[in-house]
Amino acid sequence: MTIRKIAELLEAKVILGEDKLDMEVDMAFSSDMMSDVLAYVHGRTLLLTGLVNEHVIRTAEMVDMECIVFVRDKQPTQEIIDMARENDMVLMTTWHTLYCTSGILYSNGLTGVGRRK
Amino acid sequence: MPLIAEVFEVKKDDFVSAGEVSAKIKRTLKKLGVDSAVLRRISVCSYEVELNLVIHSLGGTIDFSVDQDGVTLLVKDCGPGIPDLNLAMREGWSTAPESVRTMGFGAGMGLPNMKRNADEFDIQSTVGVGTEILMKFHLK
Image 1 (spheres, rainbow over the protein chains, first blue to last red):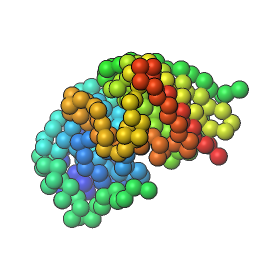
Image 2 (cartoon, rainbow over the protein chains, first blue to last red):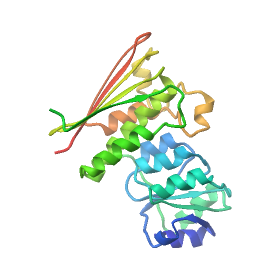
Image 3 (cartoon, rainbow over the protein chains, first blue to last red):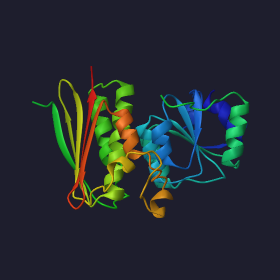
């Protein structure tokens, strides 16, 4: 699914990476625990989270995630945006909750990461 | 003779810099052309261990080296040591304080995740002395 389609479905505001909206992700992972992101994520995965700090960007960098959606209208600080820019990431924010955000994307065909290898 | 050998210091409770060492390691290995799947495993391990040094240790070092066979991360801290290694290796078991959990860490996934992602993993710990973790990643 393209980032553009995800933004449309979630009525999301694109904070960073307008030029990368045609990029595709294969699955999504929802969590406020970055420890779990490090343990579960592989491949081209979208991160959905209500956590907003620099560690979210650093964690995404480590597992090669290129797009992050902040839920519940959470707004990243300029420092977080700058850090994401250095890593060529797309940042978006949506008013939906984590549960609803996940449900909307799942019902439109974007699956989860599945069982760990 | 290693192609690259560098030692990074990691300070206790330094959450502002946490992850910078791992980002440097990742950038270095990317320049060397390390396969992206292997690089992701190395990055996960270095970040996990760097966070462990910040959260749980009294400070320590990450000795990063690359040679013909692969990448090695040798991590040593100044204590306090892990009383029960079997418990520490169990997924979901954590001694991280609530303040660390609010930052998104301390789910008790760190050590098991390192073991899963490294090609070779060894941990030794003595209470009152410190912990040493050796992780190797094959490049071939």
